[in-house]
Image (cartoon, rainbow, N blue to C red):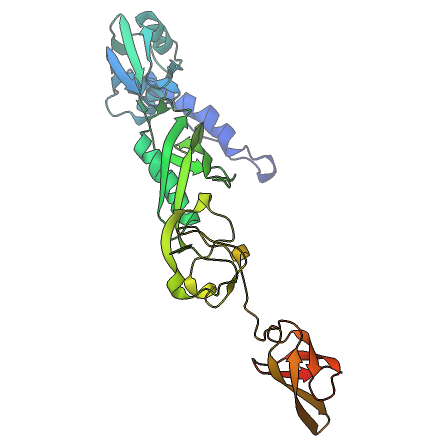
Length: 332
């Protein structure tokens, strides 16, 4: 067969040329009357949405690749759902094969049982894999903190098509403020979404917290020996909990704290550098002139804060800024 060359401006697209030439080649090949033997199985396992002849039969075409490929891809119908069973009628298979235009009369020797039972290959997801996926998400969220999930519930599980399964987390929130775990996982098989899982439970995340070793009273100054570090569930704690004793050492208690109670930053306050009634150095600076006298603090003062100070010599009250435990500078 000779194909006449065509001017470039009238060139036939390759897919049209293939669609015309391939069936013609099959017909010409079939006229050579190569013997074809097709042996259909009684039971077959299929893997696709469509049942192909190659999945339910052994095909022999004496090495003719065109015929072999065409017969392999012959569609016998839709596959059942994953894990389900379907039947194919013998006459339907015979009629479908005989209707192919590229096959000659009597060219095919076909052996087929009266009924062909087809089962769709399938797989299931186990809870362990799902829990591992959730654990990985939690480990990334709560780095270096021990966590446990109780009352885990998984909804939406079903039988899936056979293939590579991927679990893709939804971009929503993983856990709320009370520790309620709620996450969606999309199930993908061979790059096709096949369903969605809903996973829920109660999350506990352990965190280091500072607790009182003994009963502490309001107004006391806290030392490192007054507290201890223990592990508590993060979701049972006030957001302002303390994680290291050094954070509050030297501070004053604003309220009573019972033994074993978790210490929060709202329970403490910084201790003043200068106490009301303290006698301190009152420094006045004007250019290079520096005058130092004694004064009495009229209120508690923190470092770099402004307080009222009475000049002992003159009896005058001035505003001064705290520079140390015993020294303030007059503010002009």
